[in-house]
Amino acid sequence: MKNVLLICNKEVKSYFVSPIAYLLMAFFGLIFGVGFYTATRQLMQYSFQMQMQGGGPSMNVNEQIIRPLLGFASTIALFLVPMITMRLFAEEKKTGTIELLLTSPVRDLDIVIGKWAGAMTLYLCVLGMSVLDVALLFAWGKPDWKPVLVAYLGLILQGGVLLAVGAFISTLTKNQIIAGGVTFFVCLLLWLLSWFTEFNSSALSSVVNYLSIVTHFDNFAKGVLDSKDVVFYLSFIFFGLFLTSRSLESLRWRS
Amino acid sequence: MIKVEGLTKRYARTVAVDNISFEIEKGQIVGFLGPNGAGKTTTMRVLTCFLPPSAGTASVAGYDVLENPMEVKKRIGYLPETPPLYPEMDVAGYLDFAGRLKGISSADIAKRADEVMEKCALGDVRYKLISKLSKGYRQRVGLAQAIIHNPDVLILDEPTSGLDPKQIIEIRELLKHLAGEHTIILSTHILSEVEHSCERVIIISQGKLVATDSVSNLTNRLRGSESVAVEIEALNGHPTSAEVQQRLEQVSGVSRVVGKDPKDGRMSFEVESLQGRHIRSDLARSVVNAGWSLSELRPVGLSLEEIFLQLTAAEAKAGHKPEAKADKPMDQKKDEQPEAPKQ
Image 1 (cartoon, rainbow over the protein chains, first blue to last red):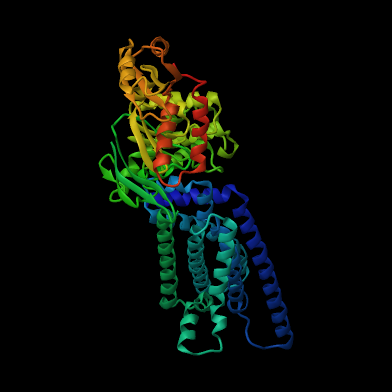
Image 2: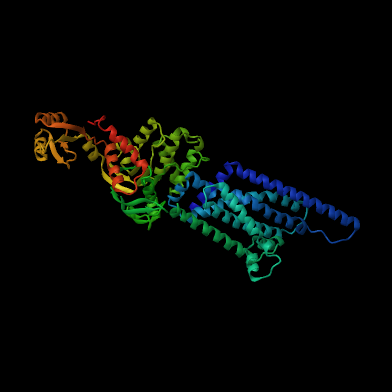
C-alpha cells in the first residue's frame, strides 16, 4: 500500500510539473463550459417560449442540462484518456527508468495500481473542472442532486476502465505516440460497439452490446444506479490492471 | 555472496549468456570484463532480477533470483548503463523517491539522502532539476540511487562510460570508499578500469566465461615474469629440438621452456623467466653463441589487455561464428605486439 501511494504520488507530481495536466484541465474546462453555456441558453429560450404560450411541460434541469452534458463529458473523456495514459509505461521504458522500478523491492501489481491511481487522480482533476459549471446550477436552481452523483460515479468508473486499458497498451510499446494512438482507437472501438449491434438482435450482438462501454454509461447518465453496471465497470478495471501487471511481468522475458 | 551456476540466457535468436558459473565473496570488488555484446549487461540484469535466466541459477546472499526476488532486490543496488533518472525531478526529490521505493522508512529517508549526497558530492546540485545536470552529475545521481539503501551488493553497469578523465577518477575514488562495506560488481570494457579498481576479474566473451582470476595474479604474469617467444631456424635437422631446449633452460633466469611443434624448419619455444628477471638479451646471446640462427625473439606481452585479447581470441577461434567486432582489435593487437614490448 505504501508503495502504491509512493508511485501514485510520483505520477501525479510528474503530471503537474509538465504542462500536460494544465492543458488537459483547460481543454476540458473550455469544452465543457461551451457545452454548458449552449445547453443552458437553449433551456432558457425554451422555457421563455413556454411561459409566453402558457402551460406546457415543466422544465427539468436534470433532464435537459445535466444529463446530456455529462453524456457529452463521457465522450470527451475518450480523447483525454489516451493523453493521460500514453506516457505511463512507454516513457519509463524509453528512458530506462523502468529498470529502477523493476529492480526495486516493489511488487509489479503495486507499480501498476500506483500508476493507474496516479492517472485516475489527474482524470478526477480534469473532471473536477465540470463541477464548477454544475455547481452554478445548484446555486441558482434546485436540480435533484442524486442522479447527478450517480452520473459522476458513472463517469469516474468509465474513466477507470479506459485508464486501465490505456495503461495496458502503454506497457506494450516504448513509443508514447503509438501508445496514445492505439489507446484512442481501442477506446473508440469500445465506445462504438453498441452502434454496430443496434439493429441486430442475435445472441452475439447482445454480447458485443454488453461489452460496449456506452451501454452501461447510459444507465448512470439517467441516474439509475444498477449493480450490474457497477460490477461490469469494476471487473473491467480489475481485468485491465491484471493484464497490465502480466504484461509488465512479461517485459522481463520478452525483452 | 553471489553465486552463479550454469547461467544461460537465450533471446529469440541468440544466446546472450551461455552456461556461466562463478562465485563472488563478500566485500570483493569484481570487474566484469568483455567486449561489447559479450553478455555483461544480461548477466547483471539476471542478478538484479530484471530478467529471468533461461537455465541455471543465480543467487545473492543465499536468495535465488527466481524464487525470492524480493529478498534479492532488497540487497542489491543497481546502476544500469543509462542511469534511471526522472528528468522532471530535482536531485533531492529523486533520491527521496528512490529511497522510499527501496523500502527506507520516512523517518530515515532524509538522513540517508543527505549521506549519499555527501558521499557522491551532490550537495551543490541538490535542488537542481535532473534534466539540467551534466552527464557526470547524472552518473553520480545514479550511483547515489544505487547505494541509498546501503545494499550488500552493488552492481554497476559501466559506471564510468561517457565521463571525462577527472570524473572517472572521482568515481574510482568513490568506489574504493564503498568497497569495504559492499560487494561490488563493475562491468566495463575498459581494461585500465579493472586494473585500477578491482580485486578480481571475470572475463566473458560472446556469452561465455573465459577467465576468472585475481587482478594481482594477472598483473603478476604481466610485471613479475617475462614470457618470450623464441624461434630458431633448423638447417638440415640441426640443431635438434631437444638440444635447443636444453640450452635455453640453462640460461640464467629461465624458469620454464615449452617447445612447440616445428613448422617450415623453424622451431619455436616459449620461455618464461623467473620473477623479476629480464632474460631476452641472455637468451639471444646464448643462441647466437651456439651458432644457431635466431629468426625471432619476441616478448609475449601479458598486459591485462593482451591477456584479455588472447583469451577472447581463443574463444572466438574455438567458438561459433566469431564476430567481426571481436576480431578486429585482436588483429591490430597482434601487429602491435613486437613494437610494444611490455616490461
